[in-house]
Length: 87
Image (cartoon, rainbow, N blue to C red; front, top):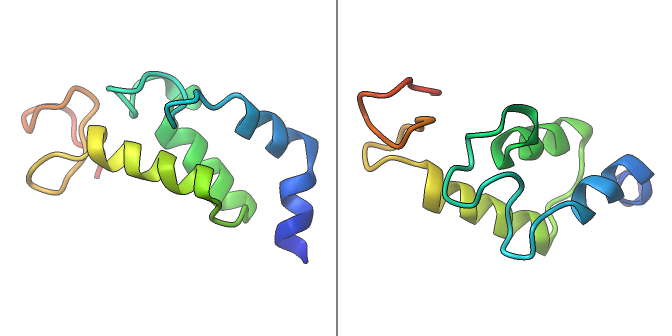
């Protein structure tokens, strides 16, 4: 019940409504870019709030993995293994 209540909370509804139709916040090809408005940061905030996994959030997670994860499994802001590691 609490998870459904959090989905109805206006700030959460606003965050989900701000998502691009192609399943990202910020920049599609750069999910770590954009600071607090990035896909990565938005997903972290939604998780900390206890927002349940929805089809929309699952697609954003897939976008993050498709465009943000390096072949070695790590994450980088600039898509290079030599770049600043986030994990």
